[in-house]
Length: 485
Image 1 (cartoon, rainbow, N blue to C red):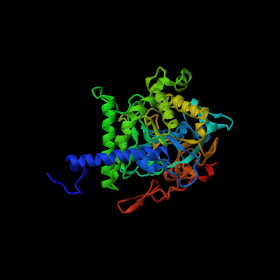
Image 2: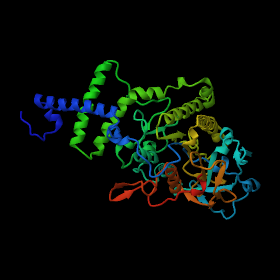
Image 3: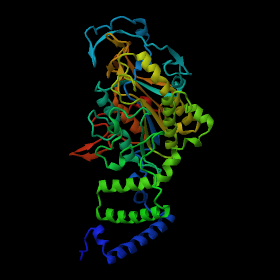
Image 4: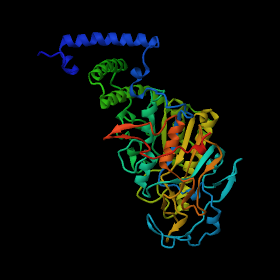
């Protein structure tokens, strides 16, 4: 069988002459690459591919991000947004809202929080007894009390917080960051999503999707109890044979990629397989929490009697281990999708006291431990910690219930660490906590600020798709400069 000079590599290698020719140049290329690497003359992007570390647009305050995302819409009025007027007028109708209909219908009277608020830390910030360990860390936090969302539905709300759009199909914030900055550690993913021990959030992988960005920027999903699947080498395969096969495949892939320049899907697929091979060694080590001291294990609650709290503690400790090894962006989910309201997440429609008394401790001790641990290791100076949920909840109880309905008109998030003011509060809702009225911001502003702290201009971070230069912030967003150091 004869072949033309331009025949595909896979076919060309079937004849002995072509195979030997390519192997000769391939081996030479490997040798040349080794010499150049040893001399420091090999370009970083050629060596590491699409996930090579890239410079930011301007000097960054933060090198990495961990986003603690509480699914189900945590009530700001029962955690961080202290409202004396809500306490004073408990049980009365909310003025001007006698016919107010929200997501699930009619509302009842104003309802004070079942948990007491107290001043905390040197800043005197009022925080709820629901989250006592996190409340002790208020001096490290920068609160945004005037966030708003454009939706009052969980699925679109998750998408808006994760991707900047209420519809699925757009890249997540972590995907944008890994696309822009790559990673310093080529043996671990640039972007990791850690699902809650109880399961995935409502929209599942759409929260960490690459969207229309090249596939290599999609988040890698695993947690402390469910490591990356299908990663280990089968026992029946000899380690030397496995390494030799990978070396051969690498040569063939490089040749194939050279013949198909600009093929993002091919480049992503090759990069994913090569990363998987490297993770056979790196991923088991990063997930081995037994290496941590008894004091650290106790700090995170790894031996707690509540298996879900202990599981979330393991996830928080895994997040720290990933960050210190160079992973650029970690999304740490708290809460999982469930049709029963409030059963597995923060969706407290019917019985907010009993639901939150169950969920609060699961979040509280491990998340506070992550802040403490990062600070003690000096990592909080260049790590940005983000805490958010998809929207807030009403200052009233739903009619006939002891729970609060959805409220996108005003809610709270906080940032801690690199580049943000500490013990600081920005913006405000009205006296009852229903609507943002001072320094009102939205999710686009929130995203623009996070990107800015990473040294990225949200208006310059774009990707051409379907006739438009797309970006995380769409055509909106302003950096919230008053919270920056």
